[in-house]
Length: 176
Image (tube, rainbow, N blue to C red):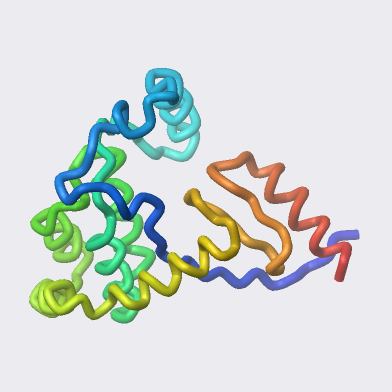
């Protein structure tokens, strides 16, 4: 017997590496313990199953302004569209999403008011919100993305197979 339940989602932006310089940093320098060839081989293989193209990102971008821009997009009803376009810009097109010209280009591509976005970023309008969600994530021990929290009790960290989600969702559903 299958049981139906509602799933409510809310994506929250937080800075994983706020110490990243404005110009970004080489991933191989920032995370030297990772086998990047193996990681990208696996990402490309897994992404291909979903028509997602991963290329070899070499720079860890400073994400503060693009995360603030995502909050602008949220308030303007384009969060999901903007998020997907930023993902593609970074992982597929290898653009530095820490650069304002890239952020404005992606915003324009998804139909956001770039003049309004520019004003919001210049005035740090969304920085307090970003600080709040970052502090909340850290208080919950979250230090990587994506992290999925289910029923405020269970977490799934990283890009996991469907079965990992299925197992957690079934466990949460059985608790009622």
